[in-house]
Amino acid sequence: MDEAQEQQVLRLLVEVCGTDAITSERDVDLFEAGLLDSLGTTQLLVSLEDELGIKVPPTAVEREDISTVNRILTFVSERL
Amino acid sequence: MIEAYGSLYWFYILTLVSLPAVVLGLLEKRLRPYTRIATVVMVVLLIGWTSGQWLWLVGFLVFELTLAKVWLRYRLGHEHVNPLLARLAAAGATLPLVVVKAGSLFPTLSVGFLGISYLSFRVIQVVLETTDGLITALPLADLAFFILFFPTLASGPIDRLRRYEQDEDRVWTRHEYVYLLGRGIGLLLLGGVYKFVLAAWFTAQLEWAVGWPQTLAYMYLYTGRLFFDFAGYSAMAVGTSYIFGIRTPPNFRLPFVAESIKDFWTRWHITLSFWFRDYVYTRLAMYLMRLRIFTGHRVAAGRVALALNMLLMGAWHGFQLHFLLYGLYHGILLVLNDVYEKKSRLYAYRNRLAYRLVAIAVTFQLVVFSFLIFSGHILAI
Image: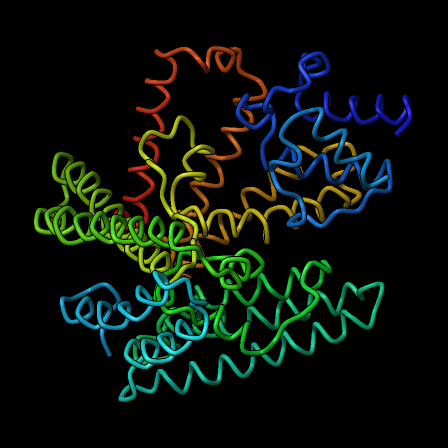
């Protein structure tokens, strides 16, 4: 994943979570912090598919795989 | 025909049927072959020969297994799935449930069989995950015994095939099995206290009457009964599963300390709620988010999906008006919950103790009121 793609994912996440604090706290559990939920996850999946062409069936995503910003970045880079 | 976890007779039979599993488990043998024999015996006892239910069950199985196999065969032969066919497959798997739910509106008809909803949820899940390419093999017996697994036949919890198979394939070490057995017995005891002591107590107090104090009392007592009865059943079903080496996921996790309605649905009838989340809500939301009218309004699309999802969950309890209202009420609350989290400055204090205590109290009141709707009595006031 290059710098531009990482920035793109971070921008999507800021939009979904509603705060840019997440870009500096990349190991915070987003579900526990109340920043990500089912609606947010769905938004993220649709955005990843539309903007980066990553198509993931919803039940193929475990919450643990996408619980922090760093994990989401890993998740995306593995599928690009 | 006997009621699951409902009588001493059932526990007598359950003990007899469980003993060989315990011996095999302690000897570090594979539990699967015996579990399947036990399932056949118990399904016959649960469904019975005298009513016509077993005919419905056999018909259901033949229909669903054929559909699942045919659909997998198509799926394996096609890189890209025809979306119309995918919807037809999902609709087909849901059809028996819809027929039975609609049939239950007519009291003179006797359609369906014990556990049809929970069995349907398991098949629908398999069909959708086949569409997604997550399931690539479906040996007929494996699928049939996953659907029929007797501890959870009557009312869930709803397991997932891919998770279930991992447990089923395992041969537990003695150390691991002793832990499973201990936990299983513990859950059976806990569930027994819930169902036969606490739920029974609430039921004995329960009397419907119109008037403010009486209706209010009914609301809390009904909630108590609903929780202890179903959480008791669920704990016993999970406990029995553990004895057979299957770690069926729990249905309840302290629902009355939920700090929001959203939190509540991760604690109450969890396997149903997560089933709806994964197989209805997410898919519906993704579909709506791509519609032209929701361009640039993905959050709105997600909220519409949320409300529809809960309405459908209400309808699953039955097509009667009070069940639909119950679903709609929770759908609206979940949307308001989302708006609140995104807009209110108060939400920033969510980790403070005082906030959490108030949030628990408010959530509890909203929830018990939903069960008053659910009870069906409120429409008669």
